[in-house]
Image (tube, rainbow over all chains, first blue to last red):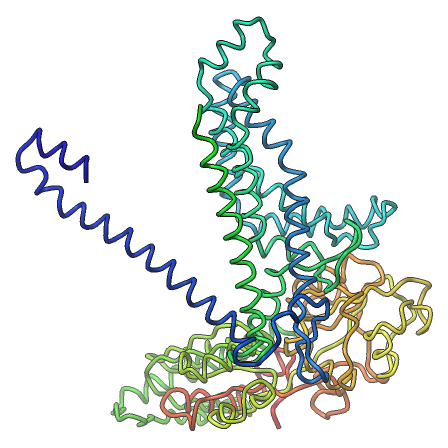
Length: 307
Length: 306
């Protein structure tokens, strides 16, 4: 609004000419918000059917027992193994990816000569563009046999494991964390670097005591965004974690996540049966997880501003 | 073997197409369900007649991935025989097929399981079942598991419920059993549970789960001591990588499917909402014709419905 009025002052008639464009962009924005709202309502509506229609008590989803098949007696819709699996695979992936990503971002922002920066940035973008099934495929054909073969001694009875899932995920979220962290480093004012260096510090000391604290909130945002991506990833993870419905006690064990159970059962259940409703509930839980992260990101972003 | 029979089928379909074309030219009507019978059987130099009744239009069948290769191949033949007809075949799983046909999103829903096992009674009663084939599954093991050629139902149950955990207990090498399950909701999982396990739950807490025949085959090929269940066609395509086990001493083969002695089998269902009409009816009839039942079906390692 304000920009259009500025232009309008400078050139008579411009405001009128910009009006259709303004309307189009406004409509686009409204449409997106509407779609998001619709999506939320749809998933929430379907996600609560398990409780409202089938009458499963809410606390049951925190039970570890997943027994959705009505043909086997008493059903139980415990989602705990899936929820813990999703959180577990995500946190370990973030722990593995963060040091590498932040290091890479620092290198790109502070250390790399111009040509290296010109190579690393596009390389990161290519990284982002690799379809997740390719990661999964690499995981199942190279990583899993390697873990289950030469590294068997570490406790991997099978290659499919929590560790394999987190490793594949960490590769996938590496570019996300790196590029957001890179931007965070770039927003640190040059004056702060200059002031620090003028005091006679080494480059490392500047990085350690000036850059990292100044970019801290941005880095945290980067990690949280990476974790969000990790929580939602289904295919690549499903291919390497073994999909064992249990709460793993070690990184070497198979496990399961919300997304992989949804993809495993989605096509085989029919709309309206409790089994299918429980899958929607899993989707709702995922949505809640990702919303939590959005809130965290926004909280962090607000703290970044003072520079 | 497969190639030869496919060629034969192709030639047959081509012949049918020629006849259909000739017939179509000679005054086919466009009445709602006014099918122009091709009478292609007249042209059969083989014993199998291609009984395709051509109706123009477009339908979609979705659902069971186990049934998909068959329906897909039949659709291709039908379309070759009947210009102007489009039969799209999609996967998605048995549940998807049943849901979509019930909602009217597709005209035919393919399923490995009966509609009443998945849908509510009042929904299931709206669907009409067309049994088009019998499909078989086979237990497979990693090629390192030697000395075991067949399991009894009891042995298989003990393995799949986690009671037996080493191959040496069933006559094999001293090697831990790595169980790879199919999703409990899948047609494969449900059939195996019903027929072999007698309804008992699989040992989901100690096994792995893979959802596709391809992923299972890869996993069995590379994991020592592993075992799982895959569809006949997928076993035939991966004979070199995995070893098949018989059930109660009977090997899984098309002949044993046909004569019923091999019990790990289930009907392939194609559901329509209400009685089918138009192209859906013509295609469902075609699925039961000689050229599909006696030529295409065995060539793809299914058995005829009857």
